[in-house]
Length: 434
Image (tube, rainbow, N blue to C red; front, side):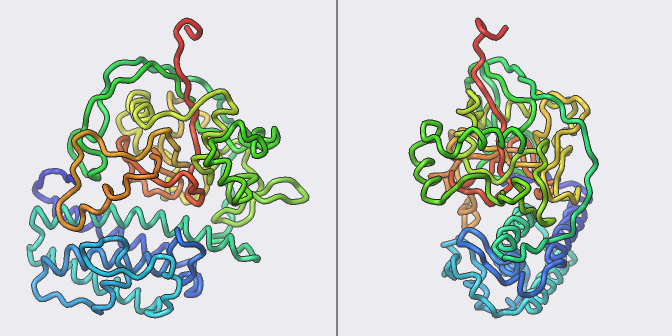
C-alpha cells in the first residue's frame, strides 16, 4: 500500500481518523444482541463478534506488538482465534467454525477493542508513529472499513435465515425520485492509463499504474434496476440455459436460483429482505445480490455484455463532471442501507459510486509488474488472484472515504450476499452507431 508523504499535522489527522473509524465499527454492533453477534450463517460470512475482534487483532499484531515497547497482548490465544488468512503469522481457527467461538464473550471482545484503542493512543502520544508505522495504521484503518461493510452484509445474511426475518434497523422512508431513462455513453478507444496514480492510499492490487489499449465501447448511464431485472425473470431467464455460462447454469440448478438472493415470492408478488426488514421491490433502484453468473446471463439476455474493469475505470474517470464526484453517492453514511434509485439530476455516469458493487467481465489478476508487499501484510490481496472476478464502485454499505476509481474488489463468481449489481456495456460499432 502507499500513503501520502508525511507533513505537519498528518500524524494528528490520522489519529483522529483512526479513532473515528474504530468508533464507527463498534457502533455497527449496537443494534444487535449478543446472540446476533455470535451467529455465523455460512462459511463465507463471519459473526459480528469475530469482525470486532479481528479488526483489533490486526492492529495488535501488525502495529502494537512490533512497535509499542512493553505492549502485552490481551490473550495469547487471540493470535490464532482471530487470525483470518495470514499464514506467516501462525495458526488460524477454521473459518467455517467461527460461529462456534461462544467464548470470549461479546463483553470481553468490546474490552479487547478498548484495550487496543488505548494502546494505539499511547503509541501516538509517545511519538512512536514513524513513517512505517503510519503506513501500517493507514492499512489497518482501510482494512477496518472493509470489515464495516462485511459486518452489515454478513448480519443481513444471518437475519435472513431466521424465520422471524428480523430487521437490523427499522424501516426508513426514502424520498421518491423520477428515475432517468437509461442512456448509452460512448467512449473512444485508444491507449488509456489504468491503476492508482498520484498521492493518497491505495491497496497493492491497484498498482502499478499502467497503460492499456481499449477498443471504442459504450456503457450504460446507470446500473440495471430491479424492475428491469424482473423482466428477465418473467421472460424465463432462470430457465434458459442458452443465456448462461456452463458453470453458471450448473450452479443455478444446484442452488435452485430463481431470483436474486433475498427476493421472496408472496401473494403480492416478489418482495425482498433488507437490513431494514421485508419490503416491496423498489423497481427503480439498482438490483443487488446477484452473482457474476446472473449478471452475465442478464447482460446476454439484453444483447449486451459486462464491461471490463479497464472500461469501467476509464468511464468513471472521464465521465465524472467534477473531481469530487468520487465522494458522491449512496454510501454507508447515508443511513439508507439499501440501493436507491438514480438521482433525477443529470450526470454522465450515474451511480458510479455507492449503491451496488458492479460486476465486471475481468478476472481478478495482477497488473503487469505487480509485486505484493513485503512481510505478512503482503498476503492481503495477491494470494487471492485466482477464480475471482473484479467488482467496482462500492455499495450502499461501503464507507464513503474508502472508495476511489482505481479500487478493485473481488469475489468468486457464485457470490451473492454482497451488494453486487451490474451495469451494461457493449462494443461500439461506428458504422452502426454514429
